[in-house]
Image 1 (cartoon, rainbow, N blue to C red):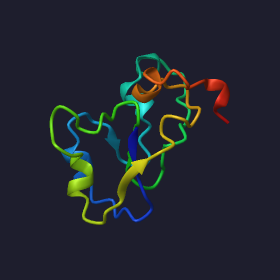
Image 2 (cartoon, one colour):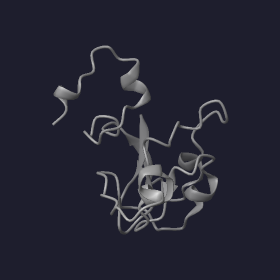
Image 3 (cartoon, rainbow, N blue to C red):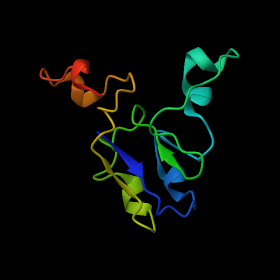
Image 4 (cartoon, rainbow, N blue to C red):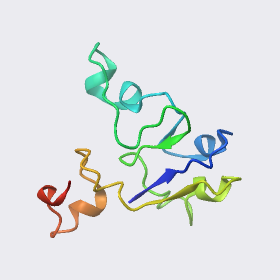
Length: 115
């Protein structure tokens, strides 16, 4: 499970600063160009994931671990002045090709059920 940033976001950037994993990026910055090894060192155009945003900050679900083992609750949720950071129930089931932590331990999950 991960979080998403809603349209109420005022682009203040405090969530990005507080995230210990770098899972929050400014709108318009494609995370694959920043973190994905297959896109970092070549000219392959990065595709836009379902959680990507051109306009507001966004959370990369595969990088977010909800601050587990570091804090008692997610720092982005605590620090957001607008309450724009909310749990994204569909983050791991969006058919985005990621194998999320919850799915690895869920024997009932199947990619055939997605979409």
